[in-house]
Image (cartoon, rainbow, N blue to C red; front, side, top):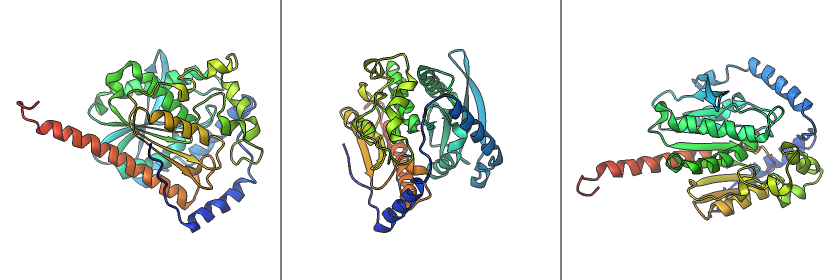
Length: 334
């Protein structure tokens, strides 16, 4: 397991520490009922209508389609590069399983599309305000199967990306694809930001205090239990509900990030250690960073995103090199 650190100067860390002082004044994200998330989701969609031109400033457009997911409609949002795509990213948004949609990642995904010349397919999975978490996992697995079977993307390497709850769904989806090893082999990287991989709470979650930034530390364990109200902790720890306890045989190389101040940091560190038994993992624990740091207006966030895009480019280039070597083999040596 590669635990090399991204180097940040004193000014970048000081900037993040100043930003943390602002975060300390803001309310923590907490899930105590199903009403408040529905209200937040409504406000999110209203605000997105006002900012619908975000992609155009990047010279991009989105196509919204609906696929069949086990007899249910599942919306997907596709952003394509200006030229020919070199790969495709399957993106799972965050939001604590109860809020969010693909459009909230338009800015991040546009940067990825332009820097890596990839198409991005984002999953508008159902939310846990109305659907058991198993339904969310089913949506995400259906989206992956659709993408891997789609003629448009048939010859392209696939990278899976997820953050926070989306990291959980991304890891669970990869475990779900183990029943189709020929499709799992087409996935050449997993990029996971500060995900949730144990629905009973890792040690850092259980030790979280009221001083936690962004997330409500004392309420996190109970919030996780609300996702699966009729299960015991032993049942909650069964994969893929808790990906941390899965078998990572056949997994692609992974790049993982967690913040030093994030109560979910142990989720990433423990997942990286287990994943590394089957595939290469590069993991970074970032100083002075809270949950959600890739969305913060800081130099550290910019550096992380730049490193992530460079990693995606390396994964795609490595796959292309493998294809080129295969094409150069003579019939006698094949």
